[in-house]
Amino acid sequence: MTRNIIKLSFFAFLFPGMLYAQDLRKLSLPEAITLGIENSKNLKLSQNKIDAAVANLATVKDNALPTAKASFLYNHAEIQTNTLSIGGANPLHLPNRADAFVGTAAVEELIYGGGKLKYAEESTRLLTEVARLDADKDKEEISYAVISTYYSLFKVLQSKKVVAQNLESIAGQLKQAQRFFEQGVVTKNDVLRFQLQQANVSLTDMEIENNRKIISYNLDILLGLNENTQIEITDPDNVLKQAGTLNDYIEMAMSNRQELRQLDLQNKVADVNIKSIKANTLPTVGVGANLYYINPSGKFIPPTDQFIMPVTLGANISWNIGNLWTNKNKVNEARIQQKNIVIQKDILSDHLKTEINKDYQNYQLTVNKIRILETSIAQATENDKLLASKYKNNVASAIDRIDAETLLYQAKINLEIAKADAGLAYYTLLKSTGKITQ
Image (cartoon, rainbow, N blue to C red; front, side):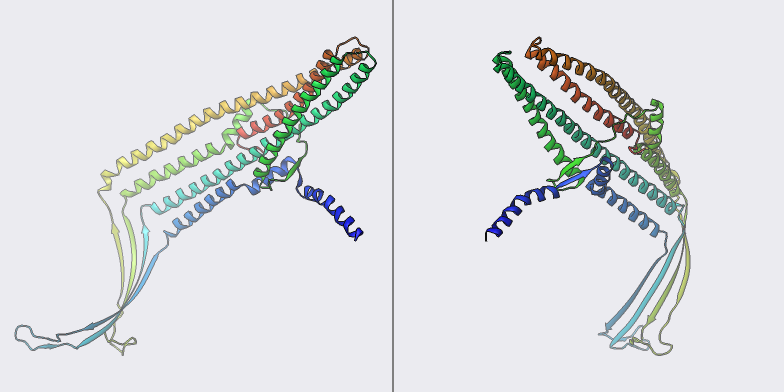
């Protein structure tokens, strides 16, 4: 019995750890991007739009196929007055009742419709490409959202590491100050200052931990994971990328941005629409065949020579001549709409240039910040060592010692954040070109 209790106690102790291990997931940045794309509900909606566009294209293609229809009719008549006499002639005697079977079958094909079916198919195909570009744009947005959240979590964790080092160092300084106080080297006020510094840094650590929980939860939702999953991230590649020239990125954007490519496709759609409207002034030509089955015998299978099956072949040409003078304004209206698309592209191109310039300058700024912060850390480290030595020799005050240490750890935090900001700024620059993964 005792052995069973020990086993149960062991599993009760182990079980929470097992649960935690199940909720822990290590993800690199590329893995997180892939997972976010796979589980994105927005991308699933975009794919549904593509499927709808493809289905619509298939429907338009079906309009070019010949149409066929068939019908079969049974008719029964009760003739109440079955004797008919006209002008004194011999009366005509009709049966009391009559049955008849009538069947028809027809096939029709539009030979020429002014090209409207061809234009409709071409327009629908172009709109399908627009839907695919929408999906590509959504994919870029999802990728960037994952990257941004991933870097936010990375910054928080890096700050947490630096704060933990700071707390460890403060604990050592506090212990030293208490020993100096006991030896009568420093005053009680020096000990209180280190305790106050420890409390302030602990509050900072609490705020960072709170931010970590919020960002981690948001990343779980973004990646489609269970909300309780603890994501262990790997350090993203913080090697500073050598940026090209501003014109290089502008040219990439002019070629890659989905919005510009969509406007190009919409311009083509507008051109096809103009051709389709012009086709209204052209005649249409169609052919058809009809088969009739007439069986007045009253029997489903009639006797010989008591039914007829005529077959007719025909062609028709129709032309709405009035469109020759009423269609002109419709064409002008379509051309104005097409011109509007061209103007929209010009406006968007200018907007993209300003966006890329801003992102390019921001990346250059983050790179310069890193260089300055690396220099400041070297200076803060040297200053911290100097003040630590002076404090041990009772030459510097506790305030000077605390200030030097605070400056050093703040510089370390700023450097880690600046490196993460530089990585995110580079991805932001790539996003503005229309393709994050280049």
